[in-house]
Image 1: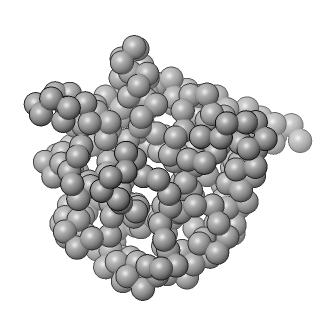
Image 2 (image 1 turned 180 degrees about the vertical axis):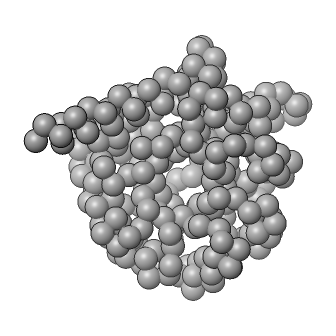
Image 3 (image 1 turned 45 degrees about the horizontal axis):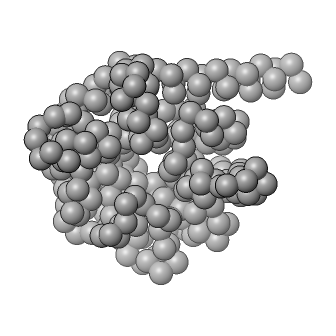
Length: 249
């Protein structure tokens, strides 16, 4: 399983003072050195954290993969088509939200999403759709030619009881299995942290997790490089245990 480090919240801290520091581009370079295999950033219409300069410098300087999260609006589509990220992840976007609250309305936006995906494919840009773990949504993602889905793990992460978490986890497992059976790549993200990541790692169909807030939060106390390394080590440790179990069986 790959670790995608989202550097949005580094930019959030920068924008709190309207200055130049901390720089999310520098954070991305440190994350790569610490083992991140993808750098994730969300260029919002309101530019509340990541800005155009950040995205262009990330594209020019990172050595791994760039996953550009974005709403499917004409302004942001044009930027993505110009800089050519390795992956675009289409997400819903609401002006007053603190963070992304749910998956895409893929049913209501089927035609426009299909058109957008086709535009990206003409530039050889892979497309992921941020979706709630619902069978109908995943099948529709395949129908409109998405390459990946990113399963929204927010309800699992925010569960207040063990039973509630297990219920949402079962839905994530089912969604991941279905997506792989349809030849879709599977990523996951939202609300994942050092405490709840283990059962997600144990889902073999999930190829990459996107984590930002938890890493930036820990970095305040431990430093950014160590925070990324600790998450990378968790992914490797639990993935290794799963492989050993399979081998013994």
